[in-house]
Length: 145
Image (cartoon, one colour):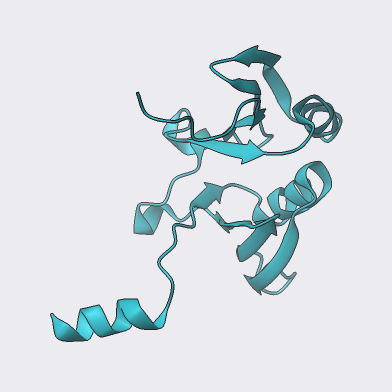
């Protein structure tokens, strides 16, 4: 137990989702073009080794993209029949980001509207993952009652 505590003290604790997709190289390029993602790390994704595992960053956030591998129980939304999670991308201009994502191949599920203290809309990327794109309109998180 002490060893686990020591490891936690050495590195900051963070959560980085990993999106399983078909056509990983194309997914990486979509996230770069649609969201301004920067590729931080990559394994594979070449003509010799097509499957890719890539770490991307957007602003201060980070996520991973990898080709699905059913043999390891990693399924894309296409294989699973839908996404099992939704990503939230916080940006200064949700309407503009949604518009760029649609131009790059996303499907708009819901346009950005003001609700619950946020300007928020939703898209489905070309690989089946749903993204809520928005920004808080009030200090966030709001004070607890």
